[in-house]
Length: 304
Image (cartoon, one colour):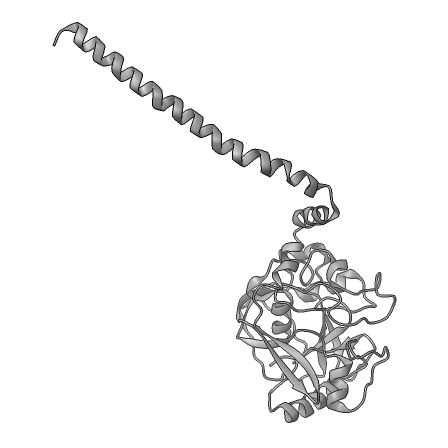
């Protein structure tokens, strides 16, 4: 093969390679033209209307992922007693850090320390605080100061809760009780779905809680604020909630939560209420409370 034959082979190869290169360049332009025009011009109207402005604010806040988490998958059981229905939410147990965790910042108090790990087993907890409608269906009366069927029952002592459970369990053949303090905090934090927010379901207390600055100094119907990650309402605010067992000081060691009643006349109230400042709405906030005390900002939530 002489030099002229070799040269003509190279020229042919160069010509055949130039054609695909031109075609592939044209092919590369087509997808970009399809993707860009329709999708960048159409969203412009959606950036101006109100529907799109609200999501943009919520997306930038760490709150809305939590609020939107509630409708995900919530295992719930509905129980009816004397014509009144209520929901219990399944909480998968696990290990969590209880007390003054990092997101609580300088608001955390001495009684919330040290932060320590706790193991809780599976349990059910009320979707809402016990309503006056449910209390009256079981007990036949209503002790509440602020009356309304869907408002939380209040003005109840610790011993009143025991009487309520005795009757409720007889009517339903169940084993309802108060949540332990660890169960309460684990659920308030969102359980295994926790987004590590300062309040139950949000870092913005106005979105999830009725408290002194927005309540008008009275209780409100349950489920009128946003839920937390587990679909639980009013874990922050509306009324404080009794927890089962006696008040205890925290220790640094791993704690295995026990559901048995602990002795002691000093009990625990959790969650804050409509008269409280925001610092009491935090998921780790805890207050000692004599078992005979009652007030129109203390209610309860079911557990089983």
